[in-house]
Image (cartoon, rainbow, N blue to C red; front, side, top):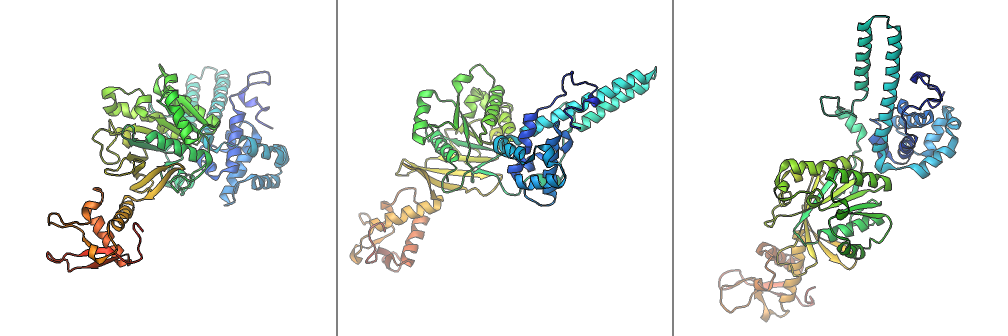
Length: 498
């Protein structure tokens, strides 16, 4: 008999209040695992068939477990076939019920959150049954107080063990995982939200100097996620975005227009609307909204401002960790987190450039710094420097903001070589009489080096000269000695800058 109507174990009748349960959370779990293999991986270590109050949802969950154990993909068809073989398909509501679940209720992004709800309710129901058993024992005890107290203690200890994984702190139980369990539950493939900078279930920091374009960069990244379009030539996963901003409406409106964010799947929370509320409460509300709207990305711009860190608080490791905790909690819900921070005036290497305590960087999984390259002639060019716990991230990538959005120009070395090649070909003539050495100590004598940008290093320029000679784009003469330096000119047929 269905647990919805069989309440005998709870010491109740149908006129009593129903035991704790959440049918919507149960349906969200079983719906999600049927459409997303990673959803199953995130909940298989949390729930069993017996945690479901509605028995038919437990049957569906167990069917998913059986199929996975046999190496069969989860979907409505495979689950339906297995339930039919078990003579359970019609009792759960047939294929119509399975179709309703997968079409209307699947929410893979928040599935772990719903699984925790189902598990907690199952523990509460277990507590009711255990308490009812002790109450019955109390009626039968007849003066045997020691036995009654033992029953109470045993019931409490059993319940505490049952709740392992949902309790924390105060010396209570924790869930300890074996390596084999982690390998089975966590997919080998990285769940990229925006490759290689954002991972679902992880937090990324983007730092940079004030007015260097962090928010503009984020706006275009958000647009790519909303469309599921490539960003910087790499794939993204499509989905809604929630953005918390310190900017007032007037200035943020400019980003909305520039990045094309005038749409209903992009939600914004303004800092001014959170004044007077502690950061953990704001973050909790944001996560709840993100789960409600099925957001795949939560942007916090900027973290210190929104977390209310003032003055020396930003330099305090404890305050920094407290500011990070809500974001780390949000990441466990399967959402990709992107938090923006300001760089120190002196800057620094990626991971060390951010203003304030180093505890910020330690709490993020991926660290990215947006920089304006020195001596770069085009204002639209920036460099992304990155380090990551996931690997796969380029140490340095040069990008440019174009009318169509951000584009990748390649590594800093590749961009410098391309710029040096263009400058060298443009500087040199096509006549041997106009041949120039790379550099000269003779006053008034022309050479190539002064014609190149300052940020193009001498090793890069010399490497490009050799490549152009090898490719047949340049001619070279001279022995490379003081009175006969090597001199270069364009080979006939090689146009300026070609």
